[in-house]
Amino acid sequence: MRRTCLAIATVAMAAAMSLPARAADVKIGAIYPLTGNAASAGQSAKDAIGVAADIINTAHPELKNLPLGATAGLPNLGGAKVVIDGADHQGNPSVGQQQTLRLITQDHVVAMIGSYHSSVSLVATAVAERQGIPFLVADSVAANITGRGFKWTFRTTPIAPDFAKAYTKFINDLKKSGKKINSIAIVSENTDYGTSVGNSIEKAAKAGGLKVAARIPYNANTSDVSAQVLQLKTLKPDVVIFVSYTSDAILYMKTMKSLNYLPPLIIGDDSGFSDPSFVPNVGSISQGVVDRSAFAPGKPGSNSYIVNKIFKAKYHRDLDDTSARWMEGFFTLCDAINRAGSTDPTKIQAALKATDLKPSQLMIGYNGVKFDKTGQNI
Image 1 (tube, helix red, strand yellow):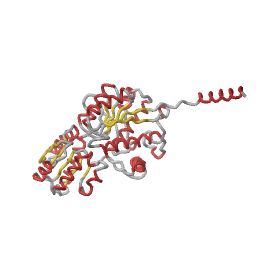
Image 2 (cartoon, one colour; image 1 turned 90 degrees about the horizontal axis):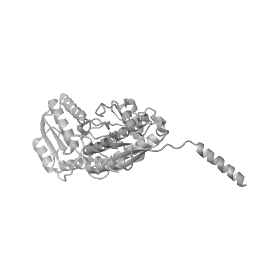
Image 3 (cartoon, rainbow, N blue to C red; image 1 turned 180 degrees about the vertical axis):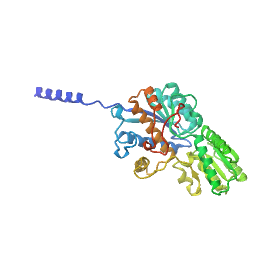
Image 4 (cartoon, one colour; image 1 turned 45 degrees about the horizontal axis):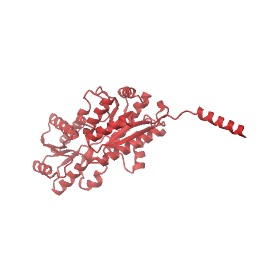
């Protein structure tokens, strides 16, 4: 009996040794605002990349056009699963800086993604640059995030000048159609995001022959915007473009209602206006607001439609512009890691530089993903 048990144990051990070893998980660091004035946007971003990780880690044959959609895990790393190591930066650049350093030096993530706030992305990418770790900026649009000579920063999203040109063309097309637009006003929060986008809009508007009646900066953490709304009410611009985070976008809508002011056209620069909490809070008093978005669910059978359906089944809401840009950024980063076939940061960096994704391979309405020498998607 002892000999039989020994023989069985030996066979079992030999069989176990012959099984392929499970590939080690690939850990990706993520920083987003889970508290502060954009907490709901940060949670939405977290939800989005969580669903993206689920899609990558399990086979979805219906997503055969999406890199890593139809397979399970990262094929070139033995089917390794991607794991998100997330942290809350609170909308605070110094916290974002600390959390990025911690994720890289203590948790040993192989790459980073972030950060929603441009002011946070500016300092977090600088940390990753010093540490030699790729940082994928999914949605921060301040123009100066790329263009600093960094070699480890890559950004998939369109940026401030792209959106500014779109607004100018849209307004001029309205004028050509017969709508009276004599002047515009730009209202922007005063961090890197609002300043960069506001500057870009002002420059594009003037180049496009539009009169800028006012440029009104404000503190994003303010609790009172009555003075700014009264200034708009006095100037009477035909279009007001808001560059605002969530709490201040909601505050502006409530203040305009209380002061009985409504400009002929309001354009929201995404952010607070596409935040999942905007409509439940002020939807009834914000009818007619126009918001920009790079995402729409699209036609049945398309990548965007299928991915949105998966997201909606879990969270009972559609992807919004911010969460969709995060998701595409995450897919792009994981595709590069898979093509690198390695968790070596230098090889991932090289794979990101070689990225050339076509529109059919994306789940968002970009014309593709291909990075220039600054790391910006062209």
